[in-house]
Length: 194
Ligand code: GDP
Image (cartoon, rainbow, N blue to C red):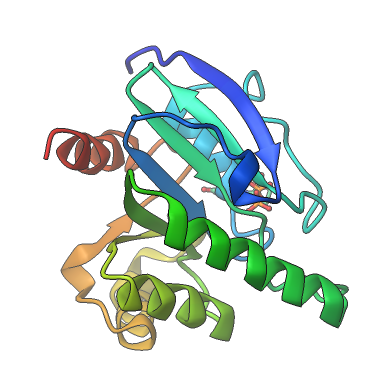
């Protein structure tokens, strides 16, 4: 696995404070506890070196990371955390609105879902939002190692139907097994080189 240089840039609630770069940007989103930090760590081959692991729902802001001086990963706070107040939900919506409509170098939404579970209403909202903005969408189904082999195709069909994406476009992933890491980099590279 290739070594990846990762630099934490900033954590910001406001689009005005987001780092100004010309690098292609990828936004990674998913519900709390889905395995997003683990996926990012698996991608950059770190335990926690660059990425500060967060308690579910604790990190409220957009976190920007520069990877290999080639692209930016934007880690969106995990959504669907039960204890969020109405005010916090509105703030989250405004932050995402501000972000999505202002980032010129945004290449794709990488939506992370749990292989075992039907995607939530929040996942659907996120994907519909990206569609409205004509963004490219990559769906990654993580924690595959926790699934029974015999159930994989049924589980994938459920994700596919719920999100309205073809099963063939859903990437199998496991952070513990490092499955899907090279494939996801392949997809990210294809957007970078586009
Ligand atoms: P986040 O809240 O979305 O950032 O989720 P984390 O990355 O912190 O993961 C939540 C929990 O799921 C942790 O206990 C992880 O160790 C576990 N986890 C994450 N990805 C995987 C995976 O691919 N396989 C397995 N077995 N566990 C995982």
